[in-house]
Amino acid sequence: MSADFDVAVVGAGIVGAAIARLLGGTSLSVALIEARDDVGDGTSKANTAILHTGFDATPGTLEARLVARGYTMLGDYAAATGIPVERTGALLVAWTDEQQRTLPALRDKAERNGYTRCELVDAAEVYRRVPALGPGALGGLTVPGESITCTWTTNLALATDAVNRGVTLLRGHRITAAGIGPHVTRLTGTGGDVTARWVINAAGLGADTLDGLFGHERFTVTPRRGELFVFDKLARPLVPCIVLPVPSKAGKGVLVSPTIYGNVMLGPTAEDLRDRTATGTSEQGLAFLLDRGRELMPRLLEEEVTATYAGLRAAIDRDDYLIDVDAGRRYVLVGGIRSTGLTAGMAIAEHVGGLLDGTLDLTPRADLPDPPRMPNLGEAGIRPYQDAAAIDADPEYGRIVCFCERVTSGEIRDAYRSPIPPAGLDGLRRRTRAMNGRCQGFYCGAQLHDLVETRGGTA
Image (cartoon, rainbow, N blue to C red; front, side, top):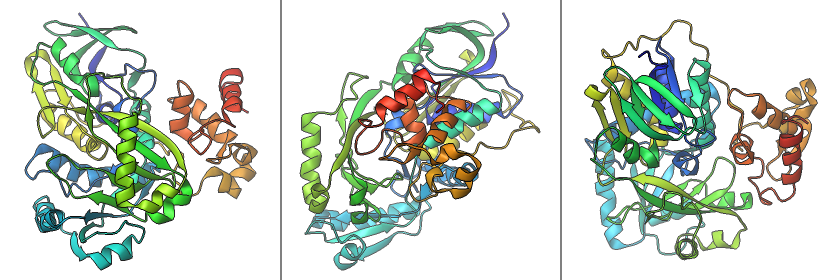
C-alpha cells in the first residue's frame, strides 16, 4: 500500500505546528491533522503567553534544555515574522520568611540552567519596581529576560509557515482508529482516512488516547484547568513587569502579568479535572483568584474586568516532557508538554528532527519560502489604524470595525484571505483581536457576523 503522506503530525497546536513546519522544509510529504476546526484551538490558545528563560526549570531535564533553546529560537523567529514580544522582565516576590529564604536557591537553580542574570533585591527595590504591590513583600528575585508574547500569533505563524512549505492542513479531523501495517499506518478520522509512513503524536489533551491506539499504556493526561481574570487596559500602568510568586510544592502559584494586548492578567488557578472539555470558569476558581489578587495587588481589583476565561493544560504524572520514538511502529510520542511548550515548541521540533534524522531524510530544501509576516496584534507596535501609509494605500485599514480593540475591516478581510482563514468568530478573534475588548463583541459582533457570513470577510 502506498501512503498519502510520509509523515502525519496529529495536533495543530504550537508543538504540532512547529514540527510540521520543520518537516515541511524537507522533501517529505507532510500532513498536519487537527481535530478541531481551527489551528491553536486547544491547549495552546489559553496559554499565559510568557516567553520563558527557563530559569526555574528542573536542571538536567529535557524540558529545561528545550525551554532554554526555544527561548532563543522563538525570539529570533518572532523578529523575523512579526510575532509581538515585549521584554518586560519578571520579578519573583517573597511574602513570607520561608519564601525569602528560598530566593538564593532559585537564583542558583537559574544559574545551573545557564541563566545568570537573576539578582536578589530587597523590599525597597521590589516596591520601587512595582509600587502597586500590596503590603508585606520582603524581597524579590529579578528575571530580566522573561517576556510576554502572543500565543495566538505564534501558533498561526508556525502553521502558516508549514502550509507555505507544502504541508497539507486537515482541520476538523479527529482520529478515532489507527491501523498499523508493515509499511503504512491508516489513521481513521471524522474527516476520512489518512495513510502515512510515520505518525507523530502532538495531540495535547488527547495524546494518551492516541498513544493507546498505538498499543501503549504509559501515561494518562489529566486536564488541569487554569482560570484567569483579564483587566482593562487602564490597569496596565500598575503592572510594569511580570510579577511571579515564589514556587512551592503546591505549584507555581498565581501571577500578575501585563499582556501583549495592553491588558493585565491575574491567574491561573490549577485544578485537576476529569472532563477534557471543561473550559468554563467556576465560582470557586474566580473567588480564589480575587482573594489572591487582594493580597498581591489590591489596587488592581479596583479596575474593570474585561474578561474571565479558563484553559486546560495537559498534565501527566511526571515532571518532564515525554518524547519517545517507537521505530517498530514508525511512531513518535510528544506528550506532557505543559505551558512551557509555547517557548519550547520550536526546540521540541528540532529535538524530534534529531531523533528521526537518519531514519527520514531531513535535508532542508533549497527553495524554501520566506517566513510569513504576521499582522501585529501587540499594543506596543504600530497597528493598521495608526499606520498612515497603510491607510493611504488601502482605506480599509482606516475603517474601524471593533472600536474596543481598534480592529479594521482591512484586517478582517486579510484574515479571510490568508493561507489559514478562521473557521469562525473565535478564530477571527485570535487573528485580529476583534471582540477581545471591553464589550466582548456586544457592539461589533453583529457587524462582524455580517462581514463573515454575508460578505465573506470583506467590507
